[in-house]
Image (tube, rainbow, N blue to C red; front, side, top):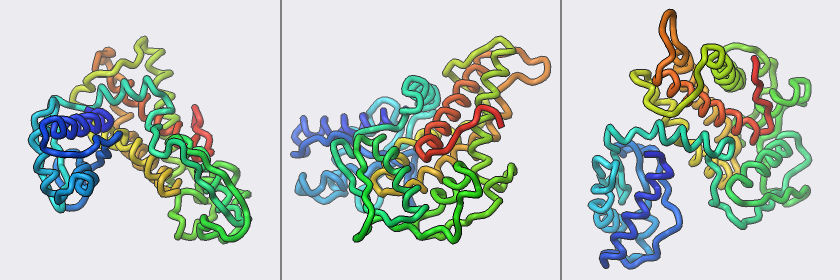
Length: 326
């Protein structure tokens, strides 16, 4: 079960509670599901009970207790635990592996995977100073906000409402891609580091890891073609895929957060997370030695290609090239 499917399951639980007269609320259009925070448990958590508490006229924890049995009996759900002020922590059944469905969704949507309507119809006005970093952040936000249905208008002059800490020197000598990464990867309150480290092709360079992981996924597709097989979503057998699947599942939430909080750095750091989860897995995709291509290899290739799609889409939103060869 993917986060999108789980979000629909949560809304269905709300609808059942309303239909049975346990809650008197308007069913919201969306329910946010995320990895559990501190004190949470299970695979995912949702704050839907806190969201509905005020319109329901009941404490959030009471709303959560009403929703819990409806959610616990849903297909693919193993257990639901209420924690804190009313968070619903959801454990999925072992046979409810989101991997194959997730890969199919990414293959279907391509680089539009994770795009949504959280800011539909909204116009975000950014007033920025004449500064290289502020300009780069605003440029990235134009694209990131558009993924959530919103539109950005960029203006210059005071009073500004977007002023990240300026770069200590001109990043242009790094070249367009490394310069953008140097300006966008740090949090807005951190001073960006303008150095040749962003150009070095080694593991200590996060930009290199992201671009290398993407290039490796493309190379795997080419090499699989030479071996006579193509990608097909399915069970990758005993390969460790949990960290990568979790990172890919989290991509829609990260895009929404980056757009809502005007924070392209969140997307940049997420791409590093995806790359770091993908790189060890990519070593297992192709057959080894005398091994023949199997359904498991086709499933691994499909997951690898999905990771490449997310990396390419994220880099594109930041205005950075995703090379096919590296």
